[in-house]
Length: 197
Image 1 (tube, rainbow, N blue to C red):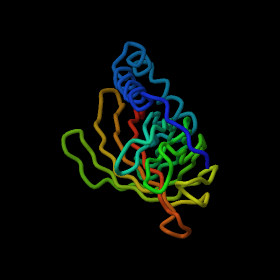
Image 2: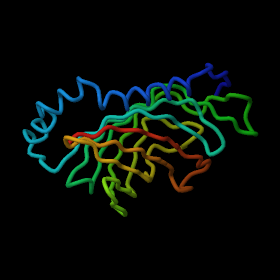
Image 3: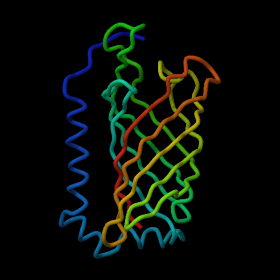
Image 4: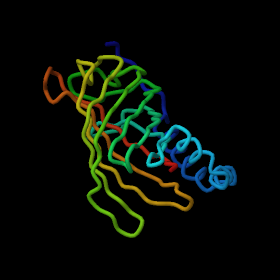
């Protein structure tokens, strides 16, 4: 793996994208989509009336620092959020600040990820829900974070219901191989998603 310096401000850019997503939920265009019910019609057309489509953006991190990765997921929830399948695009290089490596070592290049997960709702209070999830993830590359393609996937999520069947969800996600093969550093990422029933 070659060492390279991280471009400045990538994490700040991710924060701006997250704010834009939140703003977009209440924009006139988003309200128009809600009024016409196109997403609900689409889900009904594919015979999935208890499904939700989730679009998101997020940032990668290591327990001690941000790693400057940007991730864009598209997920489908099935059976009232009991199951989730997702496609993830990790769109930028990630940089690991780790004592054993040169400064700003590239820990992962852009790659695709895929998940299938079982979700459990563990709390529901006045429009807020908390979920835990467990499943499997597949990464299209191996790197300093994970030496194998197949991983376990974990999730803790906080969801808030919005008008018109929409919702916002903030989740912390972790993929790792549970020390099947070392080094097992894992992929950590924080994701904000907008969901449409």
